[in-house]
Length: 342
Ligand code: BTN
Image (cartoon, rainbow, N blue to C red; front, side, top):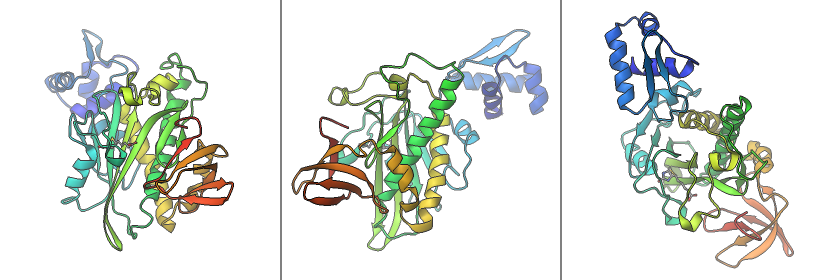
């Protein structure tokens, strides 16, 4: 009942009378009142006005399983969604749950992480209320080789999902706030796995693989999206941003989680057909921030400069150098713009 009332109030533009809710859901006034109180306890701001009814305060951005599920349009991803107010790391939660979870598609979301993990053993600062921290459990019937391409598929999905919500939320003018120094309200991808907007990193992806030599047991794909934060840790302050700080647009986190799942499933199904990203290369290249730009490849075997030309059908970055063409695999190698992060 609580979830039904929440959905009804968040869809309404104005007050909904208590009687209307009773009639629509076939429950008593007391049941409605109790459900509203429960929602208030969870943090939703609901106005109750005599003779008018209930109204949910716009912009209430509280993560909830039912709100995420309401916007899902998937068969696999998000069949089960679990939301925590706090957990150590959503990737760790999914890895633990993978022991008992029989099917792929579990999505774990948290409002805050106490031990958020970044790539290469880094910490992913995970304060409450301003970001999306989510992880998905996958079990593609593939050998481990193509697994890193899942990161690229995810990048594409996240980028599209963010763009979709920015478009939705800026077109009605309601949520449009002062854009902070960029006309470019479109996300791009810094190969392999950073989502960038206005030259600021707004999302990172951490893909963890549990496999045997010829068989994938589980893949956990973790996604951290900066939604509305305006301050970032000192060491990344110059390169990090959020959707709000860069595009000046507020997006709802439940909708964002659902949009990521929807887009991801669409691209994941395409990926599974061939076990490679080949059918998505054109889309990916269109979003590649360094395409046709000079980059510096930080290869532990020796750094070099070149021009990034796009990705191969198996997700390697094509870099043309003075000595020929290099095909860069992710892993230990990172790629920078010649004069900074991008
Ligand atoms: C990066 O270093 O760029 C990757 C960051 C990935 C962060 C996300 S937040 C959700 C999931 N849980 C984690 O502990 N990490 C990933």
